[in-house]
Image 1 (tube, one colour):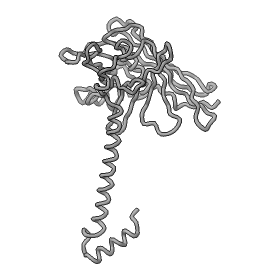
Image 2 (cartoon, one colour):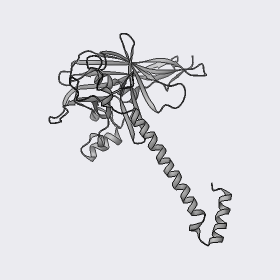
Image 3 (cartoon, one colour):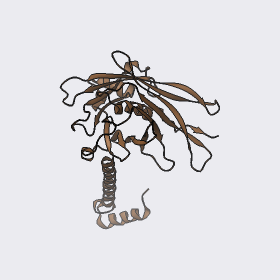
Image 4 (tube, one colour):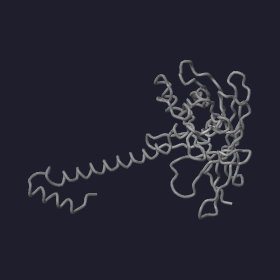
Length: 308
């Protein structure tokens, strides 16, 4: 809505100067430019702040010994969805606890803001140890594959690298996560059974990626709220791609969190992850990352409410 005083000033300017370019229109264009410039600066400052707090920093890890003998995470962990009681939550967070002593190890984060996307793991001291990124064109080599991956199925495709990659004695390589969309139910885009292939490639990328695991995600229907509502409880089974031998398994359960200023409680997601076979080329952190990926994509439970 244009201010009446500004309109009257425009009219007087036109009458006095017989030119619109020397009156209100020029000032309005100036105000529009200032607003656009201010918006660009604000978004840029926010983007820079996110980049500084959610980005790999190899220098911060140079003098730090990777925990759990370089595996970053133990063989048994508990993942707990973090939901804030107050305010807006821009980042999806999944806390990681050692299943043996319940010690807080760190957290997975997933942030999507405009063109800004960060997905990785940070320890309890806010040091980021590895990140996942989406490949260009969803990793497709032709338009048809990209169309199916991006538009038809919105399937999962990432590549994952350690932030301290290249340091002596630490696990390197690039891990590729590619969903087998041929196994996805037709046109299913959410709450779908899916199978994901995990492969590894050396840093020099001279040899092709080597298949490391085949991960099967599915869910069972659970009744809750006195049998009047249902929810999906997800499971993960990771197997050797050639022999089918079990490598790791994970199962989702739910906990309750109080809703502020209310008698209600909300369900929040919990995952129990157990690594059965340890392999230096398929480290624990990569296995646990797969369960966190599904929890963030599909399995969050905080939308459900319990009013007992």
